[in-house]
Image (cartoon, one colour):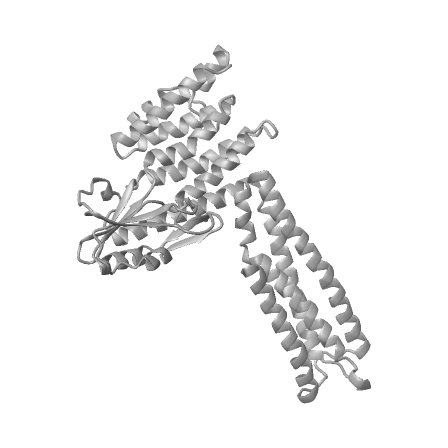
Amino acid sequence: MRVWITPMIYVTAALIFGQALPRLELAYLPQDLIGISVSSVQACLSAAISGMMSLTGVVFALAFILVQFSAVAYSPRLVRRFISDRTLYHAIGVFSFTFIFAFFTLAWVDRNGSGTAPQYSTLIVGLLLVVSMFLFVRMIQRVVDLQIAPVLHAIGDQGREVIETCFRTLALHHGEPGAAGVETARPGALSRTVTYSGYPRAITRLEIGALVREATTSGGVIVMACGVGDTLVDGDIVMRVHGAASGFSEANAIRAIQLGVERTFEQDPKYSLRILVDIAIRALSPAINDPTTAVQAIDQIEDLLRRLNRIGLDSAHIRDSAGDLRLVLLLPSWEDYVALAFDEIRQYGATSIQVVRRLRSALAALVDTAPNAARADVARRYLEQLDLGVDHSAFDTQDRHKALQEDRQGLGLSRGPNDHAIEAAAI
């Protein structure tokens, strides 16, 4: 919607002000503000009109570059990040406003041979040109931000924000989000199954408060059969309702599930990992052969996993104000996150010593920072899987020895298999 609404608001405002302001100032305001001749005003406005037409075309070209480059070089799923940039639409809107307002102002110059020009409106056009230049520089900065490091950091920052926001929201509804893993309350007998009907759509958000209210009103428990990020197709089971009386409203429950044509970052910590993995495996493709980019992506992936490692996962049991169980959410387990983060990179990067070393360093760090033995065991199993891949690789003896080193730079500062443990013991 923003693609059309924002520029159209500017265009509508330009039509209104372009008709009203010159008329009012010529009728009520003195015309000696900037002291330039009618011919000079005409020349300035004509130059502004022609220049803004060209500048608007350049901005459209920059927008095309942003979309095309992000889709080809990084991931098609990253296009949404650039398309949703408000600066782009405001820039197009301001350029359109300047062009239209200057065009209508020019029509009032020497109106009916009066020998006068709307100088206040001309001054406004000059100020709009200055604003347009600032926005144009901002658009150029967007092109500079297409470098790999800013893109990866931006995706990582988005993931960190989503992790903090999502699990803080769960904590507000249910003490500690991770306590659900040992939940013993039974939801009761199954009374209703809610299915989806419609075109394929991705779940972008769950309105937890609305679902809890609906379950409380009906006296039942809603058990979600799908999670944020899942794509629903016609006939899919969305939720199962246990113990609800006849007052349960299926329509209200469905409205609490926000759908979209594609996944979004909102309420979906997996999506940031998904995009980072996409960038990494694209960099590891034979057509590109850029393992350093994959290593930089792993830097962000490791940070996100460390934050998730400190949080209780698996499922979330939400209670109402009276303490009764009302909603059971389906959330990814720790192993789900680790598999998403490392499986594909491990497979596509199996022939890169740099990537293997960086993966080993990330997994070793996850073992050391794991809050419990179960999560440490998951990381250890992936380390063993990584070792097995090295053993079955085409590496010679020396390369195999290099691949068994831990190295946060991939190829830079190697550590032996026991160096990490020695450092931890020293601390």
